[in-house]
Image 1: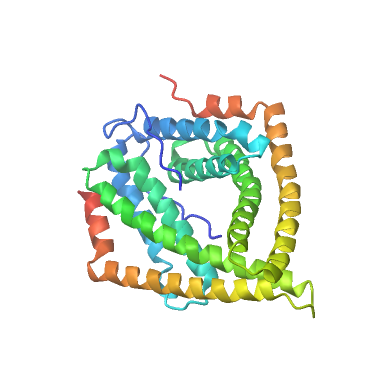
Image 2: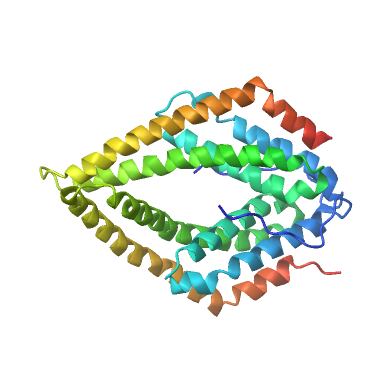
Length: 157
Length: 154
């Protein structure tokens, strides 16, 4: 399980709004830092780390919603929800494939064939599950989602 | 998955510290709404929802950790332990569902490998469920919830 990142420039005395902005922006940047690896798809840790960061980001947004203008907040929240959701489908399959591959070694030769067939089916499903995730990333880039998100949430001092 | 409960009573212009005392108890209450279901091992959905609520509490405690003394992290560790055990239970539930679906798609064909894994996963699930219940009872005996709420208000 990924550990929490250190959030800079927050303190008990600062206002909730200022700290909420710092936390949300930090987790957004953390989430996006794993995107290239998630697109590549070779190492499953990137999808995992990006998804965990998106969940932390959502937890922050759930907690601090009252600090922000409702309509724009809602629009950004829905996009983050979409990111978590499409990545979740891929991650769930990564977990299953890894688990069955581990189990494979403890089975007899005849039993292994059954599970090998299941792994192949899951690998095909994973390939399909990656498509909506990749399409979403392309769409978000085309709409400059990252810039819009940061412009809305970054601290203006 | 159950939606997070709406946080009420925030004041964005008040300090981070003061708002921590408002948000954190609400996240604890969300976790405890699922307690009534946990003694039935078949309540998969509710156990899963409790895990999600625990995860939300954990992340919220991590955001607010800066407001508290060092021993606050011990409470976070306990929350992470609970999340991990419930995560293992959920993983087994998903694996059992996938194996049953896979077996079902072959109808009458014998699949000894699938049967072996179903039996093994059931055993693991039962052991994890018992471990979770034991841990939960231990925490209840030492008034973990009250301790959490007191530390948030400290």
